[in-house]
Length: 234
Image (cartoon, rainbow, N blue to C red; front, side, top):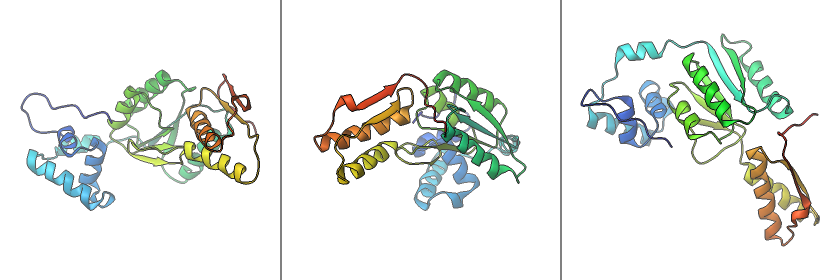
């Protein structure tokens, strides 16, 4: 996780100082101070100890400014031609249809640099929340998400180090479980087809390979990966 920046000089402690002292992200500290019921008791005690030690006092002016956010959810996906991502976007639209919030949609085209550019743009508009596909953000994108000052949800996958919240499943475990199921059903020549540029596809491949190797069945000739973007038309 990218560490919060240190405060400059010897001025009043900042939320970044508290985050660093407590060993958590600035978003987590902000949530613990604003909505303590959403944070575990152990984490609250950890953050409160850092607050007490540093003598941190929230700035009411900064808090008022931070609360002035647009009624917009920023949504970033790597593809709009892949029906999987299109369905995710549709679900977000449907969920927000009766709310005052609107969606600002960005397509990264599986480009880390484009994701960084869009996150800079979205962040400058102070969105109410950010929803991003996947867990493979660049260090720069990760830092932008951690400093966004709003809820951040990484979707489509889970991992050990969320920026804030995650909704999804392990593609590595999914690839392994699907392959093991076929092996247990008696199949031996099990192929894999996936997109080379899609990190989720590559983790499914890793799970497939692990299961096949464990069963002594792995054959690289049964694996096909395409150099084009992941695209599924149903």
